[in-house]
Image 1 (cartoon, chains in turn cyan, yellow):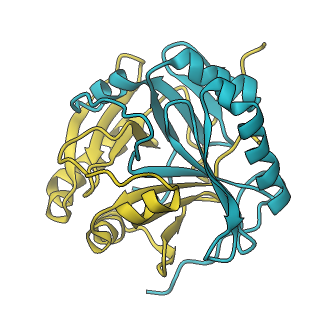
Image 2 (cartoon, each protein chain N blue to C red):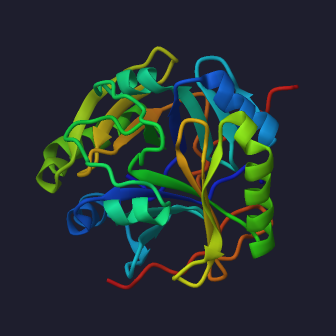
Length: 151
Length: 151
């Protein structure tokens, strides 16, 4: 199994609401909307799929979505500057809330030397928005990451 | 907010166990192991972080991990062929179980025209392993995805 992944799919209990957030509020454009809704994130995909149907697809039991709960993972967007982090969080606070999103943690200097904030999408999935000065973002949005550790 | 994401971080209740699975069983190599453990997936990162600490980082309440539960999302690896899907699932069934991973759904022809299977990592996070003939995988592991829909 090569060291890569191809798609992250988030379960949603209200696909129309989630699509409005990602498409109207954030401005993203899907390449497919039949069955799965999917977005090209630069050679990798981001998907939205009905919460229970995604469990069914993996042969897992259904589980309820609890308001304000932790889902055991986070997805991160690395911004190009601290200013961009502030702008995104201000946009979520100003406009995102009408789409069901909300700020989880205000932007702050993080212990690891960067600048970080979190918001929840309309289904409560946690997105970190961070500026990491050690991992530069290239023009095409990819991260410049260190070489693998020896060993 | 540009249409991209940078990192997917999975919470783990046993980092040593999770690292053994991803590194020894799957053969991945991290570029950092202090604090967060992170892997370069081709200009995007994959992270492992203590389950409760990840909740704390997002200012979310702790929540228990339930054996065999659905976490509200899936991460997918698009293989280059049906044979590669079969090989990966056979490896999980043969070796992965000793690392705490398990097959959730055997490889099968999927309703959407591809070939799909699921396994759970040692923390129960669902990975889909699929061959999608409509989304070719390039040499560098990126997907050839359709153009965005008009509108």
